[in-house]
Image (cartoon, rainbow, N blue to C red; front, side, top):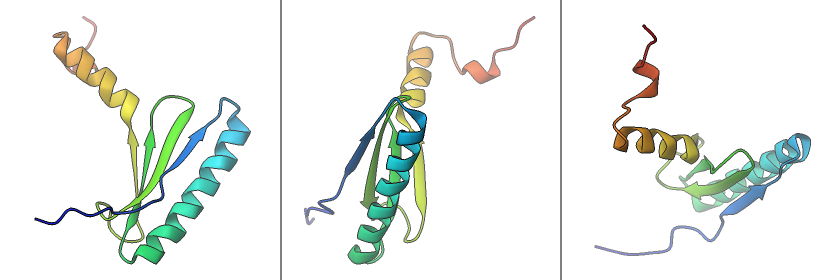
Length: 95
């Protein structure tokens, strides 16, 4: 097994102003795509941590030329509902 550092680039975007957030996120994605190309074969992972915070990272876990988007805070909320015994909120219906 080999352990190595995949990349030095991980960009954070944190803004509560929608226009600024959109512009900064686009810039972060552009930088990460350039870095992914330089790494040779990496894609870009974009993680939304909450309404205002994102991280953008080139990674070999995503195919070259692709972008993967995750919403970490929604996954955490879903896990909390499952642990609390509420199950999948999307399957609940009112009767």
